[in-house]
Image 1 (cartoon, rainbow, N blue to C red):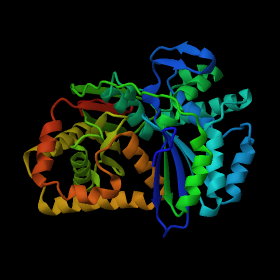
Image 2 (cartoon, rainbow, N blue to C red):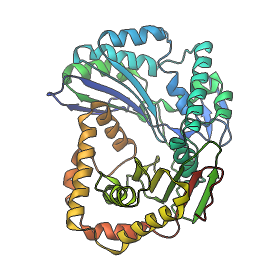
Image 3 (cartoon, one colour):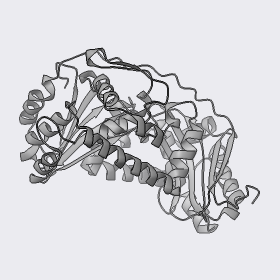
Image 4 (cartoon, rainbow, N blue to C red):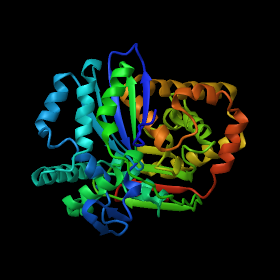
Amino acid sequence: MVLENGIVVFLEELLERRKVVFSVGIGVGSRDETGELQGENSLLTAIDSHKLHGISHFVEHIQFHSNRFRTADEITENAEYGGAKIGAGTDFDSTAFYVKGYPRYLSQNIRIIYEAITNFDYKDEEIERERQEILTELRKYIDSPGVHYLDNLFVPALLRKTWAERPVPGIPKTIKNITKEELIAFKKKFYAPENMAIFVCGKFDAECITKAIEKTFGRLKPRSFKPKTKIIDLKNRRKEIFRKRSGLELAYMAMGYKVFGFNHSDALKLMILASVLSAGMSSRLYKKLRGELGIGYDELDGVYDDYGGIGAFYITVGGFDPGRFKETKSFVLKELEDLKTNLVSKEEFIKAKNMFLSENDDELDDLEKRSQLLSDFYFRKSIFDPRNFKKHISKISREALRRTAQKYFSDKYTLTVLAPKNFSDKN
């Protein structure tokens, strides 16, 4: 249903569950951190392309601090009194706030989320405390090679000159300088009813929850909001980047391509190709690279993902002997070429589809992940509803997989390697 102010509401009753997740998604993420901020009282701040990098994440972090209704401690205590868990997350294209708890406390939990999202009264000391929390979070990402080589090296290289080249959490320089006024102006611009959607999954009374939503989010004043259309260049160019770091003993490699996002008809085919490569211990990467060649351990992945309207298909090999780089690269290229040249066997095809469906069902069984899947489906304008994947993939053939591989896999790949100081790409 759609509220009079434009908020879209998805209600999915799962009466066999004991709990319910109430999630509010806002169509704003790191891809929106350019342009101008227009807030109340004609607050207009012109910004360059990087000045507010990380502000979506910063706004998310301060939502459950004190507001005019409750202190930060009261928000947590009131939710946990009813056994509820509160959470939030920011992505390239959306921000989500959710609460998971028992149905009898749902009305109270809806109000807690509503009060946080509609609050613009922030205490300076709480903002500064959260600023330090984010800076600590950023240092943790940089210190972790298993995260750094992908989020801060490969993705920025592959998706250069797009919003996705900037990590969602921000960088220390911008987080240190974002002001309270900018946080409020950014929130006022994007947290508009027409830019929101509500997702409710689990056990609940539809009539009661509809009334609770109308008494809170339904009272928000409508205002026009038109997201900007973003032009995306999907042309791939050959790039190989080697980054050396002291203190490392292992190498971390990623290789892949820019492709269409989840709103394209090829999306499910790309997901199945990723499943062929790495879904399960009998997949190609695990069976051949790890099992037969002894390269890599648990960070072997074929991935197809959406970065807020632009897709990426890539293979990661994390934590391997840097002296076996050439062998590793050669293997990955050989497997990609094989997918272009030969049909996947019937047995491998069935296994890849079943593994994909199994992993998707695991996510649907988790109410928090289910609400996030529905949010991604809505905000990314995906063609395929994750609840109906089985019906959609039944129409995909082995030949369709080969044609998809031929369409996207080429010698114009992006390759990045994070390696020890003594690494040589000749090995």
